[in-house]
Image (cartoon, rainbow, N blue to C red; front, side, top):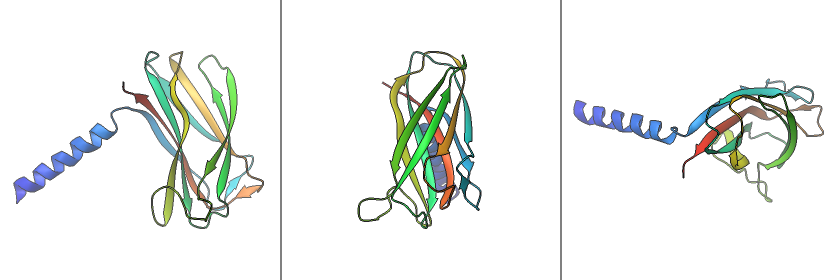
Length: 155
């Protein structure tokens, strides 16, 4: 009995490590329970050391079942190590046309969204991504956390 538990435990550790070996950065920033103020930006700082490989960048949205909309607009501001700023706007669909939530989870839904796919990042150093919501509400309710994940694309 002890051996089988040990084998299962080792298998889970290896499986978990193998799933995340390409991950360069993954972090969530919580949203206040009172809501996400339109002027409040979430800041994510990550370091890039490999400029030869390609990267995928995901935005993760965790929300409660009471989020009032089907979609979600985000304003993104990227700053590279040379302090050059680029801005993007993306729309994220959190529910289908019938109102069924997309993503995984029960009480809290999680939806990963591709932000950039198979991109080359030309410079090593520290990058910063600031995220604000682009909805009409001055205080947006129903969002629990926003995350950013950067991973290496293995060829």
